[in-house]
Amino acid sequence: MTAGRVAGRTQSDAPRVPLSRVVREWGRIGIVGFGGPPAHVALLRELVVDRRGWIDSREFEDANAACQLLPGPASTQLAIYCARRVAGDAGAVLGGVAFILPGLVMILALAAGSLASSPPTWIVALAAGAGAAVVPVVLHAAWTLARASLVRRLDHRLLYLVAGAVATVLVGPFVVVVLLACGVIELLVRRGRGSLAVHVWPFLVPLGAYGASELPALAWTALKVGALSYGGGFVIIPLMQGDAVDAYAWMSQAEFLDAVAFGQLTPGPVVQTVAVVGYAAAGLGGALLAALIAFLPSFLVVTLGGRRFDALRSSPRARAFLDGAGPAAIGAIAGAAVPLADGITEVWMVAVAIVAAAALVLRRAPIVVLLAGAIAGLIGVLLLGFAVPR
Image (cartoon, rainbow, N blue to C red; front, top):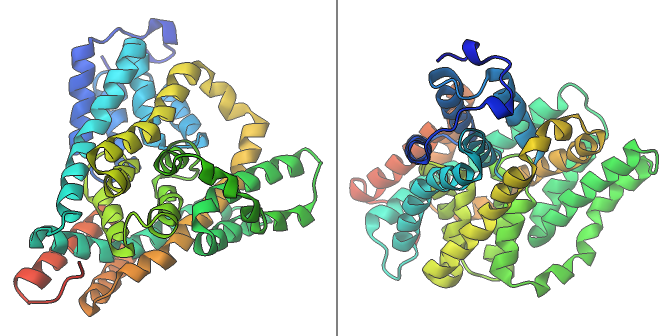
């Protein structure tokens, strides 16, 4: 059945796909989904619209747009939504787990090796090479998002972007409060209850955010990643960085850089990087707890509110909030590159970062850049004898 033959289908007309097929198809995407959210969206569309005709193209595009308005991993939410549409709530749970699990298993294996007391040389090299390439990838992501978000109307939202960047560099663990504040401020401005003078507030809000530390540290970090991130997968970097490195010292800066690299090198959603942080904080149990808390909001928001996606897209309040929080999140991504750069401690890693930046500008292929960086790390250790940081 083609997509054209299902045009105009309502949700009640959707086919009931066997759960075994949902597990198989969504698991396949979880295994081959290298390249981040754009690759995930393309693979999901190819499956449910082009190849199977389970969902018509208009509904898929609407669902994808609605997921972009929600906090948390958008491509994961889209995968859960599509599974729910074709197999109900049970399909949403099984399809979402099948989508997440392959990459999670891979990244936990890499975490166990890299965070061991005596990690294998090849894992250290892999992480160092890919980690060196992460910094230009993060900056490129921030630039791409900023250009798409602000180029049509360069206005006061630029202040939100600057606020996010400054907060990430200066008060990393509390950048989430700045993101929320920017969203609320923009909502108030749109409703005529504020002025441009109020836009300086995001720079002051972190001073009152210390109450969040009363929550269990790892659970709070994972919750921020899963429920309070706006602007795509890279927003998790500043949300985790301040807690994992500075506030609780679960990881060194170099180890955190490795974790971000592993999140890019493995398939599936980038949010699973939080499992590496959890592993560093409390072993395998901490990794699984962090992953559970980070992904649970996506399952809840889709299964409980999937039918309200259209209303979300047309909501002026939701749009206003995201117009404030979104630019701040982009700024947070850019700001994250500053502490990440501290993990680049060798001359050959600087060279990898420069080559990666050039490759991104010329070819715009982040996953290829990271793979090239990883290969450079392996060559540096195994063939050329370069030192690799531990």
